[in-house]
Amino acid sequence: MEHRNLGSQGLRVSALGLGCMGMTFAYGGQDDTESRATIERALELGVTFLDTADMYGPHTNEELLGSVLAGRRDEVVLATKFGNEIGPDGKGTGRVNGRPEYLRGQIDGSLQRLGTDHVDLYYQHRVDPEVPIEETWGAMGELVTAGKVRYLGISEAAPDTIRRAHATAPMSAVQTEYSLFTRDVEDNGVLATCRELGVGFVPYSPIGRGFLSGTIRRTEDLPEGDWRRNSPRFQGEALQANLRVLDEVNALAERKGVTPTQLALAWVLAQGDDVVPIPGTKRRRYLEENAGAADVTLSAEELGAIEEVAPVGVASGERYPAAAMRTLNH
Image (cartoon, rainbow, N blue to C red; front, side, top):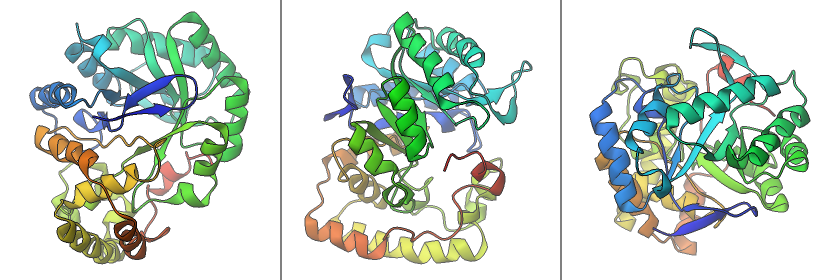
């Protein structure tokens, strides 16, 4: 597996990472045995950049990774996040919390659950509109000094926020949704800002939350308890419009001799060597398919054909339900 640099602080990771959220959170169904086997298979394939968060569960995702990585901690680059507030009862409050005293408690909890004395990459998961970003990032910088965190990142942040945070403590990565279906960062200045500052870019949901795999044709194809059942892009007329685009993407994949998933991931990887997608899965067979995308090279002609069928703004429907959209920093 190729490796890529994230930012200019020294963080180096596998060109493809593994998003672990769905193993215990949001997508319905949980199979810890298969999830553990998936993580172990990822390490065999050289996919060693693992992404989790305290909110996934909450807490159960970090606990799962901690149990699998016992004795293998030095084989991985481990990323986790804080900021989606978790109350004293261990449940999400629906609020964002960027207060320094909150994050200090969160990192200690994450380290305990992950069974480690440091996190390689620590993200602010969402931006707290009530707390100046300089306050939050000042405290995050202190975590680096204390040795609890090696590198810093932020998720779903606007260009000005990224600049202010980076000026407070050096930033290595920005994580934002990015795929053939979600190309906002090309339009809103986020990707350009990352490149101007020398900050790496980590796309989450690079397969369009599974839509670009071609396996979801109806809302009913999604498991019970899967949050995508409430996602605007997976419902009604928006779904039908998105399926028409998907059929064209599928045709390009068939012509290339790869799966739609591999075409989607190869496209993201081709956007620059500062881009490291973290497709999520909880099953070995999908992990192996995803890893195969690292060996797919797209010609200029093929990239042009993809651009023609899936230009910026092609997806119908918002990428989150309304309440979740309000937590994004624009």
